Image (cartoon, rainbow, N blue to C red; front, top):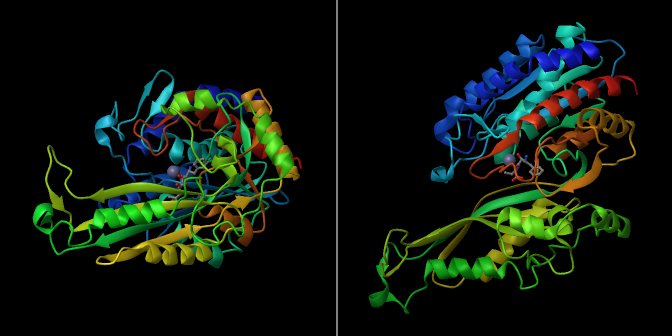
Amino acid sequence: MAAIETYLNEHSEAFLKELFELLRIPSISADPDCANDMATAARWVADKLAAIGMKSEVIPTKGHPIVYGESPKVDGAPTVLVYGHYDVQPVDPLDQWVSPPFDPEVRQGRIYARGATDDKGQMLTHLLSAQAWLQTEGRLPVNLKYLIEGEEEVGSEALSAYVAENTEKLACDCIVVSDSGQFGPGQPAITYGLRGITCCEIVVQGPNRDLHSGSFGGSITNPALALARILSGLIGDDGKVQVPGFYDDVVPLTDLERKQMAELPFDETQYMGQVGVPDTWGEAGFTALERRWARPTFEINGLTSGYQGTGGKTIIPARASAKISFRLVPNQSPETINEGIRAMVEKLALPGVKVEVRGMHGAPGLLVPLDSPYVAAASKALEHAFGRAPVMTREGGSIPVVATLHKQLAADTLLLGWGQDDDNAHSPNERFLVEDFYRGIRASARLWEEIAQI
Ligand code: BES
Ligand code: ZN
């Protein structure tokens, strides 16, 4: 693999330039105004696959297009399916970005742009590693299939259906996903668990217009108050979600897992400092890592009602709404949980307003076994690229389609994240260490070789 290493070193600047091209495309899947940019980003990925010698296609869907690629056939070699996403999260609050989100730049060894780590930068590592193989060796040691979507950040609805209908086309021995993080800088990780999720919006409609709070106050239900009641009723003082039956299917952490998590070098004070909070909070009886990785939660993602301008305005707002999400853990069914949430919201609603639950969608969590030859191969590849053996972690985030891929394709799943906790995914000033980008490419190039040798 010496020629490949040389190629990677010699092309590091070119790789960065290409990532910048992709980062310049504002592919925000949640924003209908970005529909053209979504198509442009999909085309960019498909063209890149074709340029390195893959068969590639852009597959239209009801939502945003899916990109599929396939490397030249190597008879007798294992097949690896690489999953990633080219869509990104919205960028607001825009005024908090030091440089514009779609005008990437490197500052102090970090690439700043929306999508740098989540997931354009991470996803691209697996294309560039294949390029290095094909350009130097003229072949790949494995068969690669690429499945790159544009709806990960909005629930992967189209892709989930596509996977179910195309299991033969997507058949593989192993699935590789780089859309998560390392345990810390220079400490690579293999992730064996992801949380699931269910999201929705609660809309509370009160009077037919904003009203004078003096003239009308006290006689009708305030929608903002009704919403606040619902939201606070969903979670107890002990951090437990109050939806009946919510914990019924939660698989408890084993003593061994708790011990292993406790042994990881996680510094809670440093964690608090990193995000700028005076304390941690969550479900009683669990450590911060356990709460983040292995326990379900309730979060408010956005909250709107009433007057937001300068000064005060004495009104009863006509309407209040909240975007909320629940992180789920493996074995909790989003469908069952959704029914419980609907019933609970209804029960918590004050009289005198109309309460609606809108746009509910969810995906289950995932736990994958660690005693597989693919995990051993990945460990070697990571150790080669990062100079350190990986630790085994779970992650609190969700990658909605991965459980579907894992189940439908019945293949081992490797979650190999190159990002960092403080990469600002979903936040202003998203970033990705240049070094992590390069180490990711190197690990990926080595992974193909290690898998071929299983
Ligand atoms: N890359 C993340 C998932 C992730 C985050 C994995 C942190 C590990 C650690 C992914 O792009 C993501 O953010 N997914 C969304 C899905 C949701 C919108 C349905 C998430 O988790 O919020
Ligand atoms: Zn994300």
